[in-house]
Length: 276
Image (cartoon, rainbow, N blue to C red; front, side):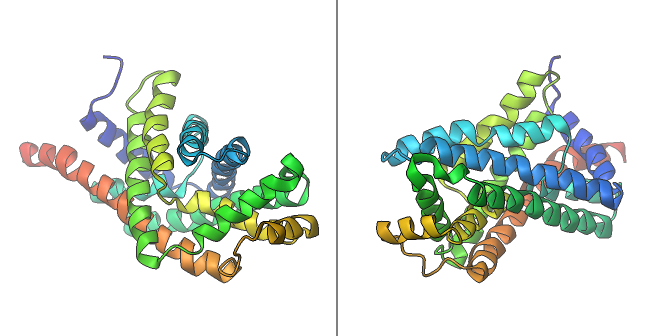
């Protein structure tokens, strides 16, 4: 067959998770910085391509076509993404790694993803990329950031759950293929769904919200934002961390655990029962 079965996928991820949990700290951090940067590239490309479009449905469709290539690059390069790594729980349930090693991986990858995403946010804000359309790209960037920091806490959790269910499904489907096109397509479709539906992804938000915050530090962009009448009362570093990133991260963890535990329970656990 030119693909792996769901049982094969779950077994393969169990081995992948064991390897991820044992990476040396420096290697893990470096691969995580690259992973955060690649997700941020996808977010920046989607915003740039859609910033001058008024039709909301078209904005979401184009964003859904562009953003997922960030995950595709991550999978093909073998770098690290926090949201996908929640499924290391499969390796824990298979006794191939420990809970402590899984939590170490999550912590380091989260930090590395944050560094990579924030670095790109700084770069686009301070070195001219947001000058497109006379700085209107910066205005849209601030609007996105301000909106995300107004989400009710419960909304952030639930939208985060849905987002990472789709991201983790995308990761698993991507490793079901045995060729490059299949792997990219497997990652692409579920992630396109979450973008089009407007769900919340913690690593993407590590780019979106800091990019808006850094834009306000550029006098020209700040003046354009004020001229456009954008409400930035909620947009602050504390709003980023506690109003958006915290609930979305909680939701992403829950969503990833739902997928990982479900795949283990329905694919690998029955094989153990049969063996016994």
